[in-house]
Image (cartoon, each protein chain N blue to C red):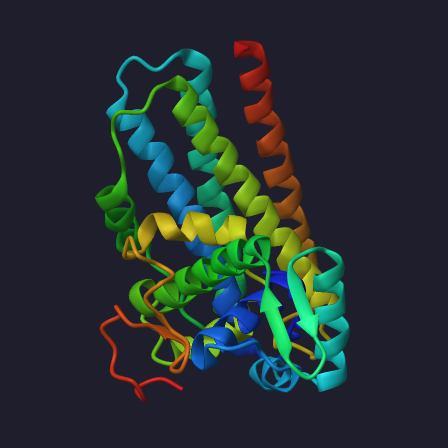
Length: 143
Length: 159
């Protein structure tokens, strides 16, 4: 998943959590980058028509940005489910975060042919716990 | 600006190689299912599927050697084949099967290409010979690229 998609996913999830425009500080926190880096990337997303940024208010995704963010979230969900269901990785959330930049959407689509995923994906993604709500896992069992 | 985390440990590298193994096992299992489910397959497509099975098997063995060198475990074909079977749709025609083969080869190529990029960006040393690692992954990427060409040749001849 490329850097822009990781940002779109983060903005989408922050907006889900707060139900308001995402501050660059929260986006930066979610991605573990500096606010300056987040600000720079938000500018690029704005140039591409994927996000709108109002100073002192925050970032909202455009319709196209939302579509791309939801695709990125689906890719991420496939990686989590693959690690949990197929490889039985206990710390699947930690490992999914480590691997998401190396696993492309094309690769995730093939992995999706052997994982079970709910039709409502990615609406069932729990932004707070960073995991699909439908996965049969106790929160706290994995980082 | 990149959020790509470098491959920082043998554990992380082994996990990525395991994913590579699973992709090869998916290719092998799906190609086998295509042959099993379609008695009247045309010669050229049948040969393409058999080549894909052989190549996936060879690629898996080479990845398993690397995983073994990292003191990690591979993923057994017997664990993946039933997962492929469970979601396999049998009613596929010539075009569906050729397209599936194209997806298989393109996906494997993309995986090796991204893995090589990630390794090039990583400054951490891993517990196996990095030249050998890059050589192997480069060989596999090249073979997958030739696999994509083989499928597109079949598609063009059919058109």
